[in-house]
Amino acid sequence: MSKTTGTLAELPSETRTLAVGAGRGRKSAPRKLRSIAWSAVPALVFVAIVAAWAGLVAIFDIPAYLLPGPAAVAERLVVDFPSLWEQTTSTLVVLSIGLV
Image (cartoon, rainbow, N blue to C red):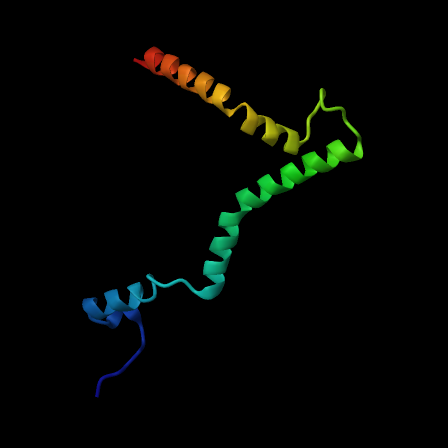
């Protein structure tokens, strides 16, 4: 009769490889949830900063010429998009020429 001690070193190399690599392709549910949560952190921080910005502008009644709220900035981006896009493209062209 053979004696079984249960150590991984005593297994044949093929069995050892399977035993060591088992479960690498799957993620457990808590691990997957944690991964999704960490992926959402940057978006949540962005939303929190914009909400704080809007709240502080409203609470302290800061004039728009000093610090416009996020809604005013978003509206201005939409209204002035053609001009902003034209200036962005010309800047990128000059930047590209400068790098070459």
